Length: 357
Image (cartoon, rainbow, N blue to C red; front, side, top):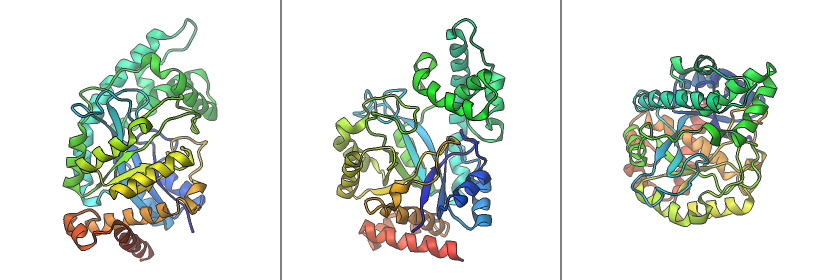
């Protein structure tokens, strides 16, 4: 049994890895499949897929973005976003290659508006610095991003630039970035507003391009395994209500990270997925050189079903290339295979068949 990871960031959002480097590291770590998951960008897709073919590893394409929950019962709640209430992180999985251009059309204006907010946050950070602390320029931030090549600028770029002004040591910069994210973000963060698509826009895009919309479960944080999140309460206090809502508005999947949560939290999430017929996807959030591409928990009996999920994503992408009606969650497919477990098995086999060609 070989491991999988569906949540790998690259230099097109924030990561030390190009798409090719990310795939190579995953291959060297023994992964069977990899999933691209950049913030607000699919610019790395071609390089990622080409590298996967070259290294003989399965690959799936997606992106992550934040959406507004305005007008919903969660508009005033802290959902899965540490920085802002009424805003949720969502993942778009299994995007058919021929529809990546539509996804890019959706994401480009988000990146543009986010850029302006990031510029204001740099100004705010510099203004709040104590005497003797190094300031950063907007040009510094842009230089460490791939914005002009279709990538996005994130808060991590700002924090990395600040760390780079303090030390030239690359590992130390990434260490400081994690510490700054937990301790400094509140001092300069500016709420996102008109850059955010509404959650309904996200669902509509998924339907248009034949992708699989997924809610990214965070769960209440005590000790952050990534070291960049404060102890906070998130969606665990109203998780039953949230899952019912997600199902009612058209979410097909929930993605979670086994290494990040307790077994009790994950058992509850998996139980709710079973109850609502929601596809379970996983991947470890790779954006730092300190992180392992391998999540050992995925190969345990509790979570090994997530391996088939990764292959099913690949099968879904390839089948959807023939027509959206052949996707895993099309009305045609759900009528022909109403049982989700049967569907996952079928699409996982299709994914492996494609990989073995």
